[in-house]
Amino acid sequence: MMARMTYVALVLSSLRRAIPRTDCGLTLAFAPKRITTRAIPERQFKWNRFLASADIHGNEEVASNVARRSDKSLQSGREKRRKFIGMAKAVDRGQWAVTYSPGGSDGSSFVSKSGLPDLTKTFCVLGIESSCDDTGAAVVRSDGKILGESLALQREIHEQWGGVVPALAKNAHEEKIDEVISDALEKANMSINDVDAIGVTVGPGLEICLRVGCNRARELAMKYNKPFVGVHHLEAHILMSRIPSFENYPDQGALQSSVRANDISARAMDFPFLALLVSGGHCQILKCLGIGKYSIVGGTLDDSLGEAFDKTARLLGLPVGGGGGPAVEALAKDGDPKSVKLPIPLQKRKDCDFSYAGLKTAVRLAAEKICVERGVKSVDELPHEEKANIAASFQHTAFRHVEIRLGRAMDQVQKEDGIKTLAVVGGVAANKELRSRLEKLCSDRSEPWEMFVPPPRLCTDQGSMSAWAAIERLLVGSSDVAEDQEVYARYPFSFAASNINEP
Image 1 (cartoon, one colour):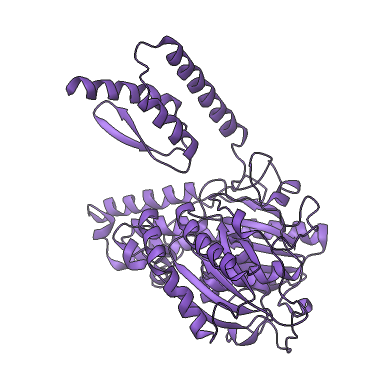
Image 2 (cartoon, helix red, strand yellow; image 1 turned 180 degrees about the horizontal axis):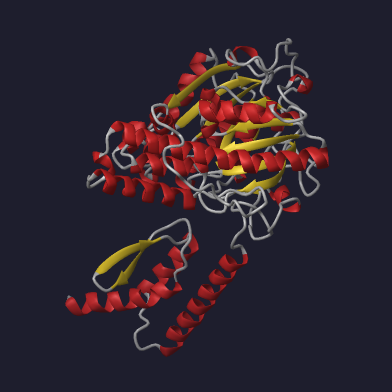
C-alpha cells in the first residue's frame, strides 16, 4: 500500500511542472510537508486523468512525450503571461478563442438565428440571470416596463465562507431556478406561452452557475418555440442605463416623456456614450458605440473595485455574504476619510487603467500598524472608530483613483468623439458616495456632462437586466440558436481590441 502511494505521489509530483496556473479547475500539487491546490483548465484535467491512469513507469517513449508536452505547455504559458504584463485584463487582443460579436466583424451585420417577435408592437421577454450567486428572473416589456421580477439571494449560504463558493452557488441555483421563473411569470400575470422571447446570461461569470440558467432557458425556448438570446453579462449592465424611465425610476427622472412602443429614440440615453462599469468581478471604462460595439478605454490590471471592497470588508471582520461593498460603505459613514494615509494607485501611469492589488495591501499594512500602535493583536480587537476610519480612508482612496482615471477618459472621448454622457453601471454603482462624487465630476467640467445611473436595485445582478439586454438585441434583428448556445467564464468584447490604449 505504501509503495503504491509513493508511486502515485512521485507521478503527480512529476506532473506538477506541466500544470499551468489558470482560472478554472483544481488539482493536487505535492510539495515537501504540505499539499496545495492549483487551478487548471478542463483540457488539462483530461490530460492529467489520462496520465494518472497510464502506466508510464519504465516506458521511456511515453515518459519522453510527457516531458516534451510539459515543457511546451510551461513555455507557452510563460510567454502568454509575459506578453500581457502591464495590460488591462479581459481585453481581446487576439488571444481569445471565443469573443462577443453579435454584429459580426463590422459590428452591424446582425442575424436573426432563432426568429424575432413581432416588432411592430410591444413584446415581452423572460430574462434569466445566474452568473454568480443570485438567481434572478424577470418579465420585461419592450417599452421598458418591468412586469414581474423575482430574485433568490444566497447571502446566508456564503456568509460563513467569507465569499462565494461556486459549488454551493450552483446547487442553490438548481434549487431555486424554477421557483424564481414561476414567481416572475406569476407577478407579470403571464404564462410561459405568453412571453415572446427568452434571454439568458451566458457569460462572463462562474461557468457552473451560468450553465444552470442557460440550460433552463434553452429548454424553455426549444419546448415553446421562442426566439432565444444569449445575453452578455457586462453588456446587460451597460444597457440598463438605457431602459426608459417609467416607475422603474422613482428616484431618477431620466425620462419624463411618454414611451411609444419599441421606440428606440425613447431610450434614457443614446449611443455613443462613455460607461464606467464597476462590479465585484469587473472594472472597465468603455466607449459604447452601439449594441455589441464596445471599445475599452481602460481596465483593471489586477483586481476589480468590488473585489477590493470585499477584501477590505473581510479584513475588518464585516459581513460579506451579500458583498463587502455595502458593509464597507455603511461603516465608512462613521469614519474620517483622511485619517489613514493610503497611496493612490498608478499615479505615474498616465492612462485610464486601474489597479487595486496594491491598495488592498496598503490597507492591510495600515491596519496592522494601527493594531501595533493600539496594543491589540488583531484588527477584530480595534474599536469601531478605528475600523470606521480605515473603511472611510480606503473608500476615499479607491474612489479618488476612479475619479482620476475616469476624468482622463472623459477628456479623451470628448476630444475625439464629442461624447459628453456617462453611464455608471454595475454593482458598485449602487454606492451613494461614488454616485455623489461622479455627479460632481460631471457637473464641474468646463462643459458639464450628463450622468445616468440605474436605481440601486437595478445596478446589481437580477433578471431584468438579462431581459432588457435581450430586448435591445431583438430590436436590431439579432437572436441566437438555443440548441447551440454555450456558456463562457470569460467572454471579452471582440470590438474592444481596436481602440484599447496600450502602454
